[in-house]
Length: 238
Figure 1 (tube, rainbow, N blue to C red):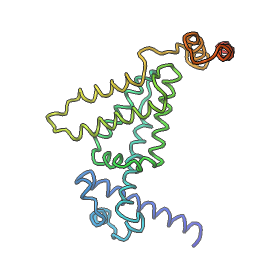
Figure 2: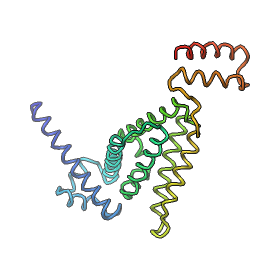
Figure 3: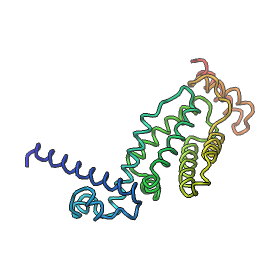
Figure 4: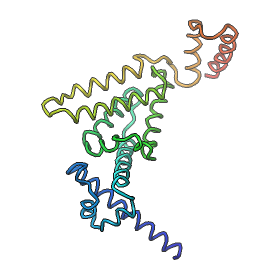
């Protein structure tokens, strides 16, 4: 087989794989997880069942691929989400976006987060990187109340909890105030009401830390002196 033929075969295989994944995702959305059988997916995709086993191994392999497809779709919404000039408003908007995706795709969202192993996908990791960049903006601006890693965990946990709780409630108990309250609780836990750093960048952060230095008791006097010298130099650069 020539290189061109090999590339053509690989492209055809990937297109077939994508067609099967989209057929499975459609069944999942319309009829639920139990409807996603290899036979039903094969019929929906217009292929023979052996093709599914050849490409995905078994039903669990297919469901893993559908979950990764879900993370990729969610990643597309993150890339297109507008950024405001205020990092706390960006945090709210990003949380709302995650919850809206979950409520619009309940079966897919439940599959995506049904097992921790699903979160090893490249798309999931890329989404976390986007979230980390927004958390970093909060940290640089002095808005972050907790450690960056903890902030990411809190944001994920509250958004996931909001979606999964909402989906378990009967229609007459689905009060939008639940989502708003959970979001604002997350914002209060993750951010401060006023930025600790007035000026962005290392110089502003250095000045803020230098101002708070006399109040701390963790460092020895020698360590405080050395740190103050470093902070003075950083502050002077601004």
